[in-house]
Structure formats: C-alpha cells, structure tokens
Amino acid sequence: MPANLPQSRIRSTGGTPSQLLRRGIAVVAALPLLTLAACGYGSKSTTDNAKEKVSAGSSKIDGLDSVKIGYFGNLTHGTALVARQQGYFQKQLGATKAAYQIFNAGPSEIEALNSGSIDIGWIGPSPSINGYVKSNGKSLKIIGGSASGGVKLVVNPKTIKSLKDVKGKKIATPQLGNTQDVAFLNWIADQGWKVDANTGKGDVSVVRTDNKITPDAYKSGAIDGAWVPEPTASKLVAEGGKVLLDESSLWPDKKFVITNIIVRQQFLKDHPKAVEAVLKASVEANKWINANPDQAKAVANKQLEADSGKALKANVLDPAWKSIQFTDDPLAATLNTEAEHAVKAGLLEKPDLKGIYDLTILNKVLKAEGEAAVSDAGLGSS
Image (tube, rainbow, N blue to C red; front, side, top):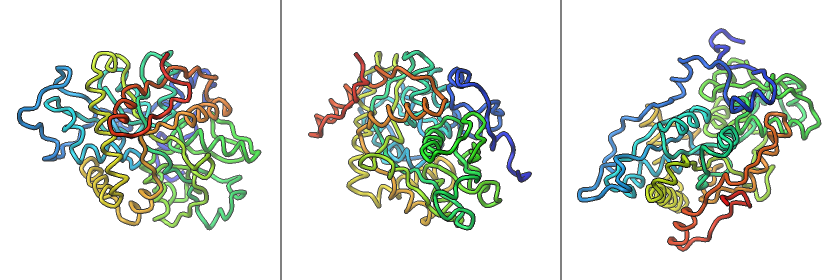
C-alpha cells in the first residue's frame, strides 16, 4: 500500500457477523476522529442562497424554529441537492428554518438521526436497514424514495478485460457492509467465488476505501477497480478506468433503490406537518429534475460546489448524472432483496423489516399532485 494512503482509510475489517450487527455492520472499525471530521459529521454549508431565505409573512410549521435535514455530497442525493439549491425546502417550511448537515457515510448520519442532530435524512438502503434493525425497529422510518441506479464496477482495462478477470484482483468498495459492499459481495458469490465478507480476503480482495480517496488509490495502483456510486465511478473513468458492469443491469426493470428518505420516529409522530413539507419539497424537486435534466444537473453541481468548494468537471458530471434515475418510489421490494443479500453474505442476521416504511404522508402528497401511490411491498407500519 502506498505511503500516501493511510491504513485507516483503506482496510479489510474483521469481526463475527453478530459483532458486525451490533456495530451496525457498516461502521468501519476504529475510525480516527480526523476521518470522522472529514466525513462531514455535523458540518454545515455556509452558502448564501437567496432562494433559501424565509419569505416575509410566512409562519412556522408545527411551531418549529428549524427542521434539520441531512444528505451526502453525492449525486445520488441529487433530490436533496436540487431541493436545497432551488429553495424548495425553505419554501415549503415557511418561517421554519431549513438547516442542513452534510455527510460522507451512512453510519454517521444514522448516529446524527439517533442523537437528534438531524430530523430527516437522505441515505442509502443498507444504513437504513442497519439503523432500523439495530434499534429493534424504534429509531427510524423510511418515508420516501429519492433515486435509483448510479452504481458501477469500474476497472483498470489493462489488468481486467472481462468479468472473469476480476478474480484475483483488488476491488474497492466504500465501506464494510455498506450498500455497494453488499452488492459486490453478492455478485462475487453469484460467480461461484469465495470471499470472507469480514476480512475481504478470498478469490477477490475486497478493499474497503473511502470514496474520497478511491480515485487516488486507483491512480497509484493500490486497487484494480471499484464497485462504487456516482460520481466516484465517473471520476475513475476520467482517470482511464472502464465501466465493466452497471449494477442496474442486475435488477428487474433496471431499477433498485440507492437513496431513501428517512425520519426519526419521534419527529414523525410529533411533527407530521413538517415531514409533509419536506416531502412536498422532495416531490417538487424530483418532478423538476425529470422535466429539466440538463438544468437540474447544473443546479445539483452548484450545490455540490457550495458544500465542498469544488464543482464536478463535465467529463465526470455528465455520465454520472445520466446513470441516475430520480423517483419518489422507494422501490421497497429491492430494499428487501438487498437485506437478503446481506444475510447471504453473512453480514446480517435475517432481519424483520416489517414496519420499516411509513409512506402515508408521501402518498398523500402524491395524490394531491395527481400521481399514483407507491408501495411499501408489505413492509409498512401496521
């Protein structure tokens, strides 16, 4: 491993399946405080967006001073990026301030939700499952969908020319037990290959690597490829990588959940009008994104720049955005399948996901917009 890639950021992580479950399985062991800070836990953007200013004469929702919203600085969280940059959240919340925290990893966002540091968040399916299971069904509810797709296996074309060539190579995933890690482990098993899910060792070396440094790891030769979300996948392509597999090709109708909207259960109970306001903003954002894809792409990139100080270049932004589908449908059946994949990999004991969804408010919003209701695939609240 090159000296400029710290071991705390590229590692294989051990532990029994039960231990992983107690940790929430997606937590990378012994993360240093510096890394946690770099992930953006608790960070807030200082962008001055005129569209986010509270309108004169508007009133507070549910008497709240603010609603705290979390999301990743990731194109697969484009709904939140656009809703913020376009001022949709603030418009729907009236005089209640829309406050934000930016994250780089699901476990830290679940931590923030559990502690009350955020109320509502955009997050991947595996952290949603982990948070729900770890709390015995008491911490969160999935209240809506946001995006599908946007995950690819990108490889070095000099060393990997076909899918069978992945055997024996070093392939990165973002975190032990995260959504892409589970998907890759499941794909490996489908090839008939063996890998210890905990250590990442076997017929393929699964190297858990922070998305922020995966492109550098690829350039240095520390990895041969990566199974990663956008825009990391397109960043690797810009460095000479080749898309060997788009994960959407493995799913029925080429659709699978990559981003959910979750809420703290107590917040949902106490402030349903505030939750409805955020969901109205989300539905409005997705409708606008799908009607104006090129403009929406630029708007999302503008928010990424405001949050991180750096916009994506066109050769990364364009292919990345094209591979993501924005939808209000949480694609609940695919979340259940992803949970089965984690069980198959030995990373999760068979979970009871009954009650993980509450789509009541979302379907109310969709009905008001003349849109069809979405399904919880039998995993809704009793």
